[in-house]
Amino acid sequence: MSAGQDVNVGQDVSAGQLVRIGAVEVRVAPGLTLDFAQLPDRSIALDGVVQGPAVDTDRHRFSFDHHGDCLRLVTAATCQQVADAILLGLEPARHTAYVNDLDADTALSVALLAHPHWLAGHTSTSVAVRRLVASVAGRDAHGPAYPVMDPELLAAFRARVPLPAPVVGAAAGAPSPATGPATGGGAWLAVHLSRAVAAIAGLVDDLSRLIDAATAEETGAPTPTVVLLGGAARALADPAGSPAPGDPRPQTHFEITRTGTGWVLVTSDADALDQVYAAGYSRVVMWRRLPDGSTAYSVARRSDLVDGFPVGPVSRPGTILAALAAREPGWGGGSSIGGAPRHPDGRRSALAPDEVFAIVEATVLRSPPPS
Image 1 (cartoon, rainbow, N blue to C red):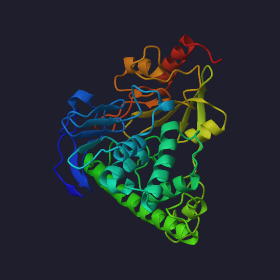
Image 2 (image 1 turned 120 degrees about the vertical axis):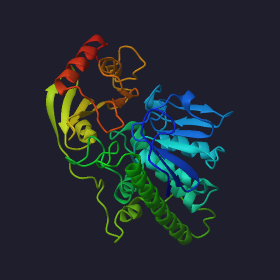
Image 3 (image 1 turned 45 degrees about the horizontal axis):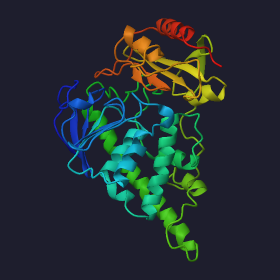
Image 4 (image 1 turned 45 degrees about the vertical axis):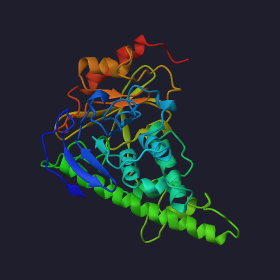
């Protein structure tokens, strides 16, 4: 990683920290959001920098996103969009990627842009990477309610790839991707991004070796197989080789603070949407107070197939996100999940939970009831 100088983070293409990771330059600017028209030539906006997917092949500008101006049920996660673009001819070199936050989807997207050769041909590496992308993308696009085909592979990713704690899930007082430490900002996030990409590269190497070993044991197998990886991948979660649990994340809990019409307002010390869904609640607003006094919110439904809870997008009148954005600009997201503003200094929403509850409940009451 070769770091440039920090500049003031704002809503412009020169914001943040410029780093090189593998084949691609990455501009890391916490909270940065742009219109697609603002992107310069040879730009790749990732996972929320520009709302919604967009392609301009004449000027080599791309937005790989599944948060705004799209139907999440049928829109692939960012890392899947990036993988497909590379498979279909995108050459990341000479492009600048833009990142405004860091999660599994964004980290894997940058790793793919940094190492596009991973997807070349039908090798053990390409097989491993495509299965890894499918697991991470499935969970990121559809949330914890989605049963990924390779849960052990996803568990290995979570255990091996260091990511800052999610804004809702960070331990009290811990820096979030949007803030970093008090002196952090883009440089702090860029360091974490670089470490995550390096860890993904290590995981890909180990997965490739597993596939090579399985292929060698199968007499006459002409190409790398797609078997194995399940139980064997579980061992990759621990460098010492001991199996990882099905989900290595810290244990979490949630508390229902208010009950609306067919939905619940809950608070949690971590990202507990999977537990909320498992408890039988399909329509949720989750909140957590942050150390700076603002509040992180997620507005979610199990999928677009759940009616009676019109999450978003903001551009659609009558949605929850549109109502919240009318009260406080900056709320955003897609049709099944969204959240509070992400300010460059790390602050989230200034709205109190009771005020959010009132806005959401009023919107739900105006929408068609669940069938």
